[in-house]
Image (tube, rainbow, N blue to C red; front, side, top):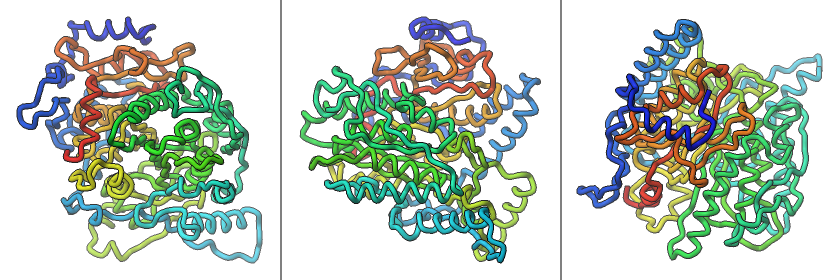
Amino acid sequence: MPPSSSSSSSSSLSNNTNSSNDKNDHYTNMDHDGETDKDDGRKSMSLTPRRNLAMVMLAALVVAAVYWVNDASNQASYSHTLTSLSTSLSSSLPPKMPLSLSFTTLPPPLVPRLATPQSSTATTASANQTVAAHDALHKFFNVLSLVNPSTGWMELAAFRNRQGMKYRWVVTQLRSLAQTMMMGRELACGKPTVPGFSVTPSSSSSLSNPKDRNENGSEYCFWEGDLVSQKALQDFAFERPLWQFVIRQFSKKLQQQQQQQHKHQWAFLDLGVNVGDWAAPILSVLKSHPNFAYYGVEGSPPTAALAAANMVAALSDNSNAKTASAYLFPYPLLPWRLYQQASHEGGVCFSSNPGNVGGQGVPPPTAQQQQQQKSSLSSSSHNHLVQNLTCAPHLAAGAAYFPQAAQAVATTYQSSSSQSSQSTNPWPRFYIAKLDIQDFEFKALSSAVEWLQRRPPCYIIIEAYPPNSEFAPHMWALWELLLDAGYNALWRGHDMFRSGFVGEFPDADSPPYWKADAKNKTSLYQAWEKDLEGRNWWAYRDYVLGFQDEEACVERIMSTEL
């Protein structure tokens, strides 16, 4: 079981000098003292990558294979994910992709292509729902101009106006589209509050005078009978310590910036918005800060529409003040070759998970499907063999290449907020990022390694499953990728399976549960194993990964030159 307190856990891990597996930690002997870099005068953050993507992934495969050999009881469950990880090695690398980082060279997001429902003389409720869902999907992407066709992002703050009429119409339309795309699934609505935050977040006393916030009585709607939705209606109780940490960190930075001459955009990236259970409370508290921006990604169109409605509702008020920015990207993020395949097939199909709609993922292809994909992609004429998705409309989704989505943010939405419009860095600035896209985190990030190397978020919030789970090989690969980007501190942010554990966060002066330095001989893998020892495979924990030198990280992401 994990240690019972932050102080004891940090001490036990930092002072463990008898580990026989310290070779696994390739950051143990790296310098993190912040000395001046002689090449460019900046503080060193140990962010210089030492390996390319192929080496990172191969290293993760080796580590995963070692665990597979030593854990006979889980070999059957590991074998499939090891194969999947091996496939990711080839699907993430982009041969024949333009090397230029120009936004204009990247492929646009793919709107899902569904076969037109066959007309039938026998009218049934199910057939009517299918036709209506098909039409709603088309309307969402193509008719209402909700999605910016050049960037793929929905610009939600634009739907808010001073009188509130337009916002109410947009919210109603989005909810209706969501429900219709989800084949008539019922919604559960309410007016949850945001516990622990003042109604005046822009004041210096905003965090010292906590109140429950929902002064406008905003109504939010979620999926009925859904795990996350039920918690969201209970004052956004699902993962509450995590989104409260996000609000505290951004509030602190935004208050500090009020005294500064230059105004940067402080941005949060939410990969896995779900129904907006984080977005709604965060935006409702920080909406009065025009320099705060929320960028969310939700690949399921029905859930994205519902999340967008909740985000617009959170932004609404009757004041004349400027508001924070909010954007939503309603496409799954794929590595290059999987994006190519999705372009050929008309998008992707999610699996069905009625009890946790936001937990739906894209199932891995079978061996037969992999062979068919390989044959189609190697065909010189495969670009002409355009297909349509054959899944039900509520499971259909488009596809996007992560660098395109990220660089659209940098070139379209963040260029005007920079100190200089002549920034040479095509990658966006995110102070904090949350990764929760159902085992696709590694596949998405592996296509944007340069972003992690040049402008890594100062904190990344991530779900980690125990090493005995079927997700473990992908988890190892993700750890390896983030370690190679220079992350060197880990906090145990939240644990929904451990009663009474309130979480350890950087802003609470909690020492890292794990950190990389010359004195610590414990690897990140060993810390992860120790913390989740003895758990069921599904009992995940949320971690906060960051840098020991946060000041240097902020300087790096705000630079216009890196």
